[in-house]
Length: 287
Image (cartoon, rainbow, N blue to C red):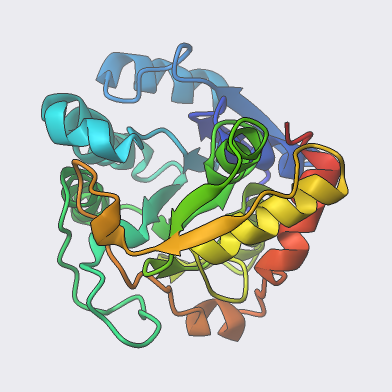
């Protein structure tokens, strides 16, 4: 059956909300604490939260995910993404399994085939480096843990899909990069996959994402098409551009497609991202 008492950190974010909804669907007792309610880098606050909730699984969705801001706010990124996961792992040791959410940004984007869990890591941004340090801290703590790497998450909250739909309502055309590749992942699908991984007693590192691959251009085109079909935005043209035409403070991995073989071997296969995108529009109130 898996753990039946969850503590979800970062519960106000896209994945945190989806995990709380999944807990309700699975009749799992879950306590969700937002960033305002729990500073996961505060050891005393973490101890109090665990003492109150008495969880058998802690699902850590708290992170500093503003990739470009991480370049100039390195101390904040290190505190949230590197220090806090290790602190949580130490607090959970012997009491609860820690599910820590990580990212494809721990890779450098130079691969040419889907990345397995044991592929060499080489982050190219502050965000990626701090997230990798968080993974390493969780492993070093020595407790029961599952590190879930995912990518391109969209759900209830600020995300690429919502940004594209809003931009389509304000601009006559859009320009979106076509040479960054990954797996668009609906937060609800990801939450279901994490719950399934817990039921399967998965430990170590696991890649979880929706099936299928895409560029951000592909995802933008699908989002505009779906948004227009639902009357949320006009069906404006989307033009493909290279990443070099849209420089950002933080370098992005061009090829981040996560390999899903381990998840499939556990019987976990999330829907294709296009089906997940349609479900997102139908249930998450994209506007």
